[in-house]
Length: 275
Image (cartoon, rainbow, N blue to C red; front, side, top):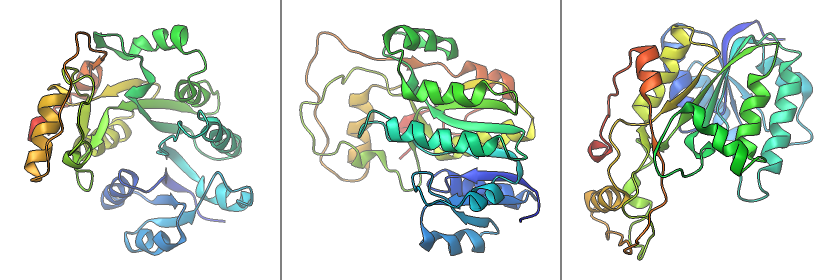
């Protein structure tokens, strides 16, 4: 049995690993999970107590999961893969985790979610606009999972809905380079840089902002056309083209609440400066 630690980071990938490393540097004791056996040594070298945890594996050891969850705070950072089966496997994995959490020492959960939980409303969108998701998509898997962790008496949960994640190895110029006749060229982008993701998550923990829901996107929202053309050119790749459309389907994510509650100023407020 591991000694009780401060934080467990489930999902030490593009976002989770640098977050866990930052928390270690701040003096916290951190458990970190990965599905890859090869990555365990990397976590160990970073001062993170490594665990191989694959919630989709029916042979996952209950003791391994129990030891991983010996913590005060769980940062839940498993990107949902919803397209393959409509999110059914993701929902099953989160149910496994929820049951294990009920037997753990965790009292606070920081759930990394996505602004994809909102429908396109063709206007500015705030945290309350999931009411339209309830109306238009009552079986929305991501919203179901958010509420699974919010509606517990055993812990308190804060949800952070990030926009599109960019930075470090995620170079947006590669996303659409060379593609033609793409739709919604005039739609605003809702993106956030890795550095701002890390800053916001760390500040929620240090300032004990629990029981909240936050949107988190860069302040500026250039059009898809302007952003992805510039991003491709910055990498000297073929710029995408967009077809002319009379109507555009979009949402413009408002992040004022996270800025107000955390007194947060974005390090990368304009996505056009991401590259």
